[in-house]
Image (cartoon, rainbow, N blue to C red; front, side, top):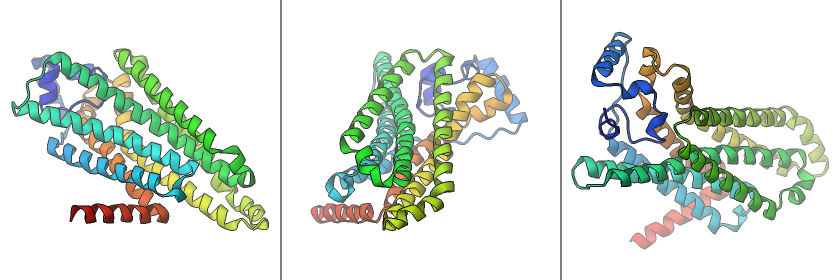
Length: 328
């Protein structure tokens, strides 16, 4: 079975990463594939078929949502603070997922319906670009979640020194470093995509960032009550309440990220642990579902921003009202 046959078939949606990240068992010859399918049926494997139109619709919705979040943060000067700069970058990371999904799905739909005849070499270049975008998205998202956690930590435990510690210049420098590291590492991941070390690096980075965030959040919530008394003594109780609200918001964002990206990283782990196991093959067959979850993460994040921030919610309403007025 060729790559294009696999891409156009029902087993997988267009790749979110290189096809080589898929387990070797997915590239067996027809006889082996039929044998594995038979074993899968005996094991009670259920393969969900998700139409490409659903991928396209979710991608477009999440793209519009994240564009609105970015415009709202740019428009409202009250949102010009380090935390919202980092949230803006998270929205850009989510946009990378949305854009890559929309572009690849459109190409696949046009190709499947015979409306577009693209040279295989061009498709491979397009796939490489999309893979870099996806890798950049996951690496930058994890990095900015860690950055926001650190920002909230400083806000809570070093409230009186926060503005001297987290200056706008430092925030911009952090953003530049994160994006540079994300894009560079993603390009290296794609160049060396045939090496299992790439999967190991991605999984290790995912687990490391989760541990880092867990330690910071645990420390914040365990000591927040004690620290709040010190801040209240300086008549800064409202600031502390706002800081804790920001910490709770980022906890929700992290939880959603784990739920949506967790199955994909489990997929990578199983590729290393049991690439030819019938049980693991059942898991691999629902890769489409993992992609839907990833896109849903990009769609849910803006809703969390709007729900948790009254200022952002107000600005989004103004933008939507302006858009409606111009439309009329």
